[in-house]
Length: 115
Image 1: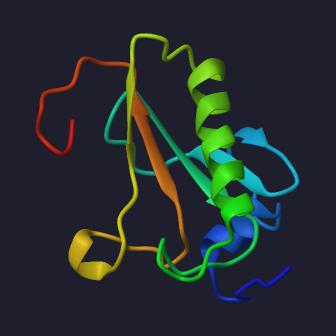
Image 2 (image 1 turned 45 degrees about the vertical axis):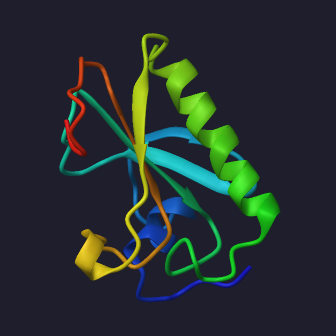
């Protein structure tokens, strides 16, 4: 499994740094965002390092991420709805260059891009 030894998300996803884990399986980890933008703000990340969505991510990893999002929604009780955001590149707001999905919920959201 390829990892970046300097990547904080690699370290969080693989248990090298303690975090508030919401869901975990062999491929992905989901943990609370350190700077939440909504009452529920969880990051779903692959345990293997990919810089972003267009970094040759295998389909089975993307499928595992989708399953992780569904599990986070179930665990957090987001049955009324939630938002999933994936930034790609610094100009889009990606601050950690490790593929991740933001799961935002627990409140009514407007039609804008961010809660």
